[in-house]
Length: 421
Image (cartoon, rainbow, N blue to C red):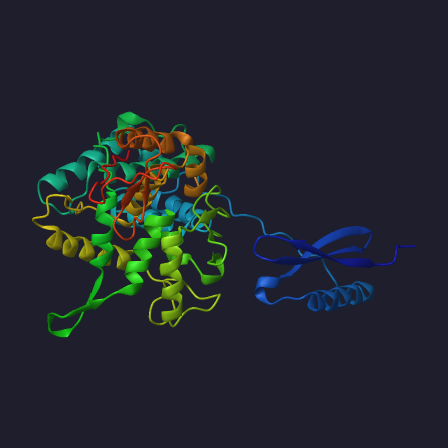
């Protein structure tokens, strides 16, 4: 006599929520069935009801276990267009949104126009080099690819190598023709920009919004966003995703819930007193100050975009340099300054405030100490010039130097020169 059909509902908790499944015994065998997901509105009550329906169908003899779909046999030598499209769809949900944009740019603007009709076996080392040289010639002759640097061309080659590495694993090709330094162009090291301490206040004071008739008004949101970048070292994606419930003004702490790296996610950053005061004032003035609101929301309450912030930062740099023209004690702000430059500025300021490399690593969300130590060696030269116990304070309102317990204070017009790796 066959055993009576039985079953139970199982709950599996994951990052996105709860997965509801059923384990049933039917026709002498055990079966595992996925029923639904909490993030789609499925509940335990739905799961219990569905289990009873399955058991009733089993008793009536009308239930049949679902058969897994058989994956289609892969083409022996697909085109690059076919394989790269499959690769992109499989990987786009595993990386950050910025990485998805980078993949799309490299594929649609560069790799696919050249390789789309190539079968994978036709992509040889010679073809990869031909692609590389074609990019260089187009840039030099017709300028059809505006200011495409060697570094950018290398980025497309790196993505090509990623795609073809999977093709090797799948057995479509025997080796990866895009791997190796020989396939890359010689690229100059990127210019690292940052703010000197005495440049911070002029930049913040230059954040204004344009009005009709050429008039301008203060832009408090951009000012506090840039100040937060300088004083916390948040990446631009972290700044724009920041919500008020992650900012504890009472305890002077900020929590990063989501980050591009595992080390960055979940880290707590100390909020400097001068920034805490400005954030508290800004919160009372903004229309979007509820716990779930974005700290730097747009007028409609949505998250702002990095391109918008980059444009406002560029305008602020231009305006600040106009106001600094003729001042011998403050050098012009680099015109290449980017939102990421604020992160480098934060690291250098931490050292000038007397912090150690381990603390800096934690605040920055780094796992590799090399960057922190490179910055440390640069900044320590300035610390030695200032003397033991010298500390930088008040970076948002003028960047002043103080001494330790002796209470000696250097002149307010002294400024720091910080070289950041």
